Image 1 (cartoon, rainbow, N blue to C red):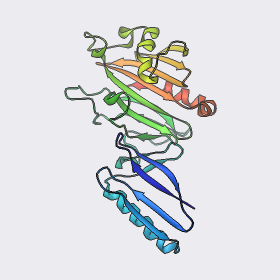
Image 2: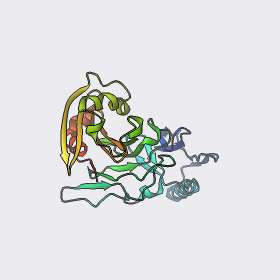
Image 3: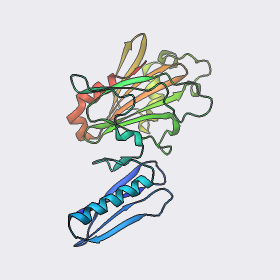
Image 4: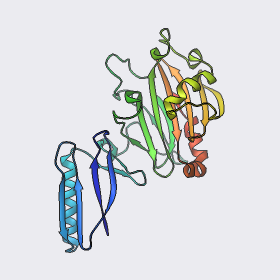
Length: 265
């Protein structure tokens, strides 16, 4: 028999979960808030009634933290945004193939600093089972990571929305071609995604056009990752889809389809 301990990491807005062994007939559970002491319950095994009381107490403690806990099995991650308890805003109902389309809501706020113009919305498709994961201010890339999604069995993705003025002063109406050719873009911005130089890691690259906008598409290894890059307004968009080795082998086709579905709308 085992229980779960839910802990708050001070460097992230996510909860971390880990299993904790029980000693013989005793059970313990804790819910820890960012600025509250841990609330714990210990009991002897006394049947279903006590178990129900224990669950109610833990649920009340989680509510006191002002958070909705959503676990991601296998990832050790849980979200703390109440909106995640239901259907994600911007995520459509499944189509006939079970895929959903996410479109960034026009009024969605983002941690992109004072003075930013509204972000031109983007969209992409994911299979059933992919869910939004809250973005932490502690994330590598800081406020430029606009969105995360994940499926614990298949992989994860994130969207980087970076100001073009980081790269050029005269690109208020940017296109990816103005920023550079595919080789220049992946060499300059690939490290933004994988955290290291991309030399020797680019397996393939392609160029696609949709509604008059050009997209650069790359596959890198290692790590296993698809990157789609484009530009619009005064921003560069980097869409990254990645997975571990086993996930990549089993879900390669779907991961590639997710990466190629990215559009700035």
